Amino acid sequence: MVSAGADAKCEACLALGADYAINYKTHDFQTESLRLTDGRGVDVILDMVAGSYVAKEVQCMADDARLVIIAVQGGIQSEINAGLLLRKRLTVTGSTLRPRSLAFKEAIARACKAKVWPEIEAGRFKPVVHSVFPAADASHASGSGGSRAHALMESNQHIGKIVLTWESV
Image 1 (cartoon, rainbow, N blue to C red):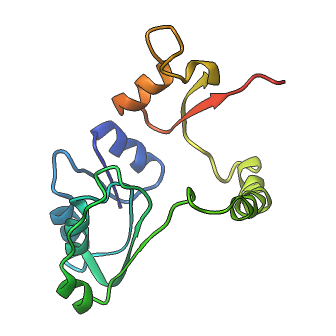
Image 2: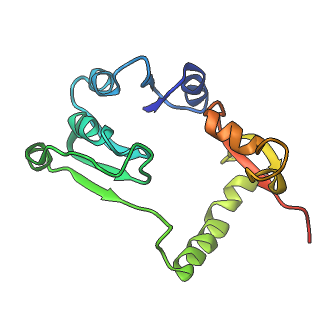
């Protein structure tokens, strides 16, 4: 089950294998996720929004579920019903790479090279790439009225990754 802010993005997620897609701009994801799970709730939520969404997410979680916050696009302040957290035995955790050491990041890169890259090469794991831009065009100071890459990202109209390329040195 996924949530996205546009019907086209929901359709793309369904095409990639999601069982259900909820457009959170036209439907309440809390109500819909409970309906789709027959009131049971979801087992895992991967949250990039945080902020006011956390309170809704806790409401639609199953007993013993886990909420993993990986970004705070909706703000750093969240309110949680601690009673519900205890009653449902929920686990809330956060994870980000920014404060991690270079050694930790290098270990992740090595593990990805060993375990993920072979899956990509074999075609079993396919990243979704929306657009590719030269890195020189990525800066707002690119001189051409701003960056096409930034403009696309800020418009939130892309489905998949925006990739920057560097010329060989």
